[in-house]
Structures are given as C-alpha cells and as structure tokens.
Amino acid sequence: MIDLGGAKLDLWKEIFGDENIRHCFTCGRCIAGCPASEARNPLRIRSLVRKVLLGLEDELLDDDTPWSCVTCTRCEEMCPMGVRPFEVGLAVRKWQCANDETRIPPAIVDLYTRGYSMPVGANPDLREELGLERELPLITSDPELHEKWKRVLMSVKLIKDNDYMFGE
Amino acid sequence: MQYGLFLGCNMPAHRPDIERSIRATLTDLHVDFVDVDGYVCCPGFGTFPAVDQDAQLVTNAWNYAIAEEKGIDLITQCGSCYSSMKLGRATLLEKEGTKDRINKLLAVGDKKYEGRANMRHMIDLLYSEVGPERIREAIKTPLTGARIVVQYPCHTRFPSELVGFDESSGRPDRLRKLVEALGATVETYSLEYGCCGGSGGFHKTSAAEAESFTKRKYEAIRDETECEAIVGSCITCVMYMDRVQKLISTEEEKFSYPVFDYNQLLALCMGYPPSQVARISVEPREAFIQKYFG
Ligand code: SF4
Ligand code: SF4
Image (cartoon, chains in turn brown, blue):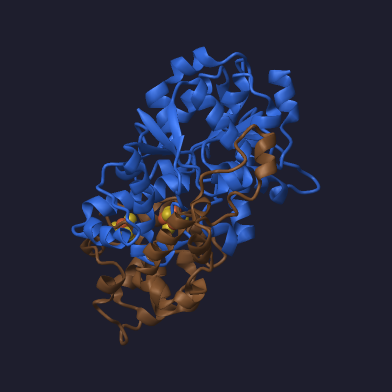
C-alpha cells in the first residue's frame, strides 16, 4: 500500500508544469524498452510519473533513480498519451536540485569557467599531427565573449543563488 | 547553404581524429561549413538539463544565436548535442513566453535568438543533402565485401516528431544506406535497433548492469552476424561501443570489433591516411584497415 497521508496533490505542477502528465493511465509502455530499468537501483519510469502525480514529495526527494536514465528518449516515443516521461525524469532531477543543492552536478561549473564539460582545446600538438588547426575558436579564445557568457549564466536565478559554486 | 560545424565537447577533447575526418569529407563533398566561434556545451543532459530549465535553454539559445548571427544552421555528429539542441529549440519556440524570457537573459550578453537557426544531424545532412549517389562517386576505395554492423543513435530517433529524420524511428535505415554507399554489406541482427547503453547516467550509477546490457548486444552480433566492424554516427555510441568491449571480455571470450564513426570510414574510402582520420581507439583497427585499404 502507498501511504497517501503526506501527499501533496499539486506537486506535479511544481515539478512538471505540463498538463499532459495527468493523462498517464499507467499502461507501462514507457518502461517496456527502458535500458535504465536494468540499473542497479532500477529506474521505473512509469512509477516515477505516478509518484509525481500522487504528490509523494518525501519519496521523490530521496529518489536517485532518475539519475540513471541513459537519455535514449525511447519512453517518449512509446508513450501513447504524450506524457513525455523522459522530460518528467529530467524535471524531477531539476526539482531535487532546487530543493537540495548537494544534488547539483559539479560538471556545470565547467560550463561556466571554460564553456565545455570536457577539456576542449587541451590537445594542440595532437591536432596539428592530425592535420587540424592547432586552436579552435572556443569561448575561452575570446575573453570578452567569455565574460558575456558568464554574465548571461549569472543572470539565471538558480546559478546566481548558488554562485559560490562558481567561485563568484 | 552554409552550415556551422558544432563539435560539442567529446569529439575535440577525445577523438579529434573524427573531427579531422568530418572536415576532410565534408570539404570533398562540397558541403560549405564554418566553425561556430564562441560556441559552448550544448548543454549535455547531465549538466543544466538536470539542474535548471532557464540555464538549459539559455545555453541552447546562446549556440543558436551565434549561428543566427551568421545566418546559418548547425550540424553535429554528437547525438546528445543534436537532441539537447532540438528538444531545447522546441521548448523555446513552442512554449508560450519561453523565447522572450530566455532572450531577456541572453540580452545581458548582447545575444538574441529569433528562432530561425536550427540543428541538423550528420546522418541527415549526408543522406538528404549529399545523398548516397554522390558519396558513391566520391570514394576511391570501396569497402567491397566488408561486413558492417550499424549502431543507430537513439538521440536521432526519439521522440520522432521532434528529432526524427528517418522514415521509421523503429527501423531507421539512413545510416545503413550511407554505409552501403561505401560498397559494404550491412548485417542485420536481433538487437540492431537497441540502445548502446553508454549515454547519460546508466553506466555511471550501474557499471556492471550497463555492461551486461551492452554485452547482450555484442553476443547477438557474435551469434547472428559475420561483423568485421561497427559503424556509428554519434560520439557517445562510438566511444562507448569501443571502450566497453574490454569491460565485457573474459578470459574465455574476448570481444574486439573495430569501431568507426561513419565519416572516418568515408574518409578512409576517400584515401585519407588512417594516421589522421582513424588514429584513436581502444580496440585495434589496423587489421581491418590493412585488409580494405592496404
Ligand atoms: S507510457 Fe505514458 S501513459 Fe503509459 S505509463 Fe508511461 S507515461 Fe503513463
Ligand atoms: S530516456 Fe531514460 S527513462 Fe526513458 S527509456 Fe531511455 S533510459 Fe528509460
């Protein structure tokens, strides 16, 4: 039995504003081909959608399973009701981050400080050997543009609220 | 028609030989392209899309704004870049008030996205704009007799109404036809249309489970095909399908199929040296290259 005592019935609006989520009729097509349903702590994408609709706030805050999604987007194609389960999973991650800053992946700091999640531009010698230009026109190649990029990101509320993460 | 070559993060950081093959082959095929000066991470699904919607969309819009200043569309090989940019664009254009809200944020950096610039995937560009016929004519050494298994990138298939370009998302065939244009035979098998399992958080949270997921794919390839090489057109698929083989191999059974990006194979068929266009991999590719390109 699911205990609905602590349920927050409007939670779906807070997590995922799209009305379509209410059309879920638990058919389970979304989970049929889901690779992450095989994760160690299985992502049960249908149940995740249910939890959002039922407003199971505490359970959802502690739920690590959306972070195992492989982002293949199969579930979106499978869903006959336009629920967009993959987007629901991302929305749960966002909502968790908004409620618990320790959830925020540190990788986003790299997007601010160097523009990329990987060390792009760190292999000029290899590039030359491959017959490529040594340098790419990266955001860091243009300090003025990079400053603008940082200012844009800092104008986003969540980034500003967590500016200490970015060394600002 | 000019395009902005959107390299993403993984390719220039880890597999610049694929970048080399893309630049070489597009030039030879007379596709007009330029670099996207000042582009940033698409953003990948594990970054802003997992954290905050405005941060996600303003990043998509930043990249589009740069393309729009040049009056061009973007092309990418990376499935995640493609999907992040396509899904982001749909939200920006279709969800009431979103574009205006994001443009207010962009204005802080003197950028603006009107909604014109779009993103295309390499397979789509090669198939629809160049076409298998011109590819067939452009190659010097066909891959006659080679048996190839194709990995179709999920991010270019689902959801089909937002990202799709194949006629059927369930049974895509454009990448197969592009490989066939090189003279190779494409082998079909039961898990042909399955995910590689390498993207997102699956392998990060559940390495053993993710590896056994992909091992089933490799066992099907082993049992049902005479595969000599695997071809993808997504940096994640290509890197993961290559890297995972050591992880799923045991004392008794080693998996060691050469894995190529499509443009790499095309570049080899056009006569470019492997030391430039197919230099970096985990599984050795020399024997395959030797057999078909001497
Ligand atoms: S496929 Fe759609 S309608 Fe069916 S359970 Fe999943 S989210 Fe609900
Ligand atoms: S996108 Fe995520 S939740 Fe949906 S099928 Fe793929 S792994 Fe499962």
